[in-house]
Image (spheres, rainbow, N blue to C red):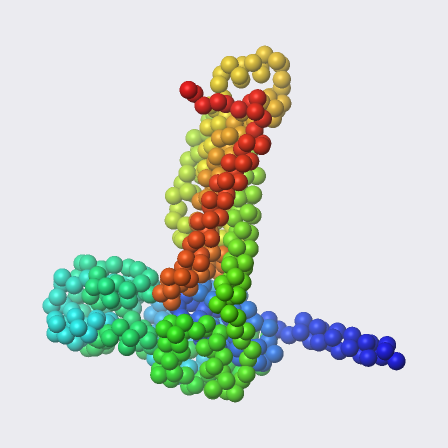
Length: 503
């Protein structure tokens, strides 16, 4: 009698697993600012409600990174804005109307939804007290105050609808202009080190910081209606999800979006919780958001970030050791190749780490793989250089003694030269490990996770404790790596072959 219920349960469980495995998987992307992350969570909640397995890759970077990932199939869907699409992504070739933009996107296999309901345009803002003191009400008024300090987000500095175009349209004479993270600009404005910054019109800080939005009296900024961009093949792969997020059209007006941004940025509620409340209030969708205690959240985040960070560092460093030590030996054995080899790895080291990560996206997509390759390249110089230096600095009498013994070159290398050079090689590996641990924090910008993730989120939310949750473990890991290699040096280098420091 007991057998039937067990068999029935097994069949039901098997069917459930089969159904879950058959469900399509959708990857949602979002940019590195709060509003985009919240909208990404809204899309993720709608995906789950329509029976789709979903992966939300949050805080991936700027517009070009997300759009490139969408076209490459790294993500399936993400929120963006019509002005950004027309000016930044299509380079002004998409035309001004939404239909013209859609037609241009369709040529690239991308579909743009109807507007979600709010226009998140750029705004130039000043503290109300400072603007009143100088009598500034419009962007044109800034031209009469060339002494002002301006601070704009890094993306705004480079966009065609950013600082260059604004300066030309309004003939602004300012030379004290800095590029910085958008979230840090508010602190600069509040501290008085900046006089005017670029804002998003749905930023809750406009009210909380008492900021005056300067009138765009020459109509420079286009309309930035929020829309959903998704791959055209999503309509075949997940038709229920496409039908589900179509309900967002006209569903979020500016006050509603500002309220959600306020809850996430000022009230510090997790974005999934903010999105779940919106879905319940607007569509009656009840989604399970697991709300853990603060310490449980921190411990879970620390464990996840540590696992991801260790993976990035361990894989990239191991590959670098396997590649760099033979390269250093080659430079030692073939003196004519030493200069080119050291020159090439030296040039790689000079490449800006952030640029190198972005260069990897078209080749390897988003996630851990491009970050590992970038970290591998950064590890080459210290290991190759120290291997070469360690071998070339072996005292001549020791080398001659090995030759007198009649040992073949390969035996001399393995039995005499590499052990003698091992302190220098280990020092190079130790340096590479410390560099890797620090540089791996940038991997969060392309979805690799690790300790950089809480640092990025902390900057976005102006949350110092969150920044420290990434910075302190990274520093501890670097110190641990130094201690580990110090211990390894004592155990791996034979005492009789150690080169004692000169007295």
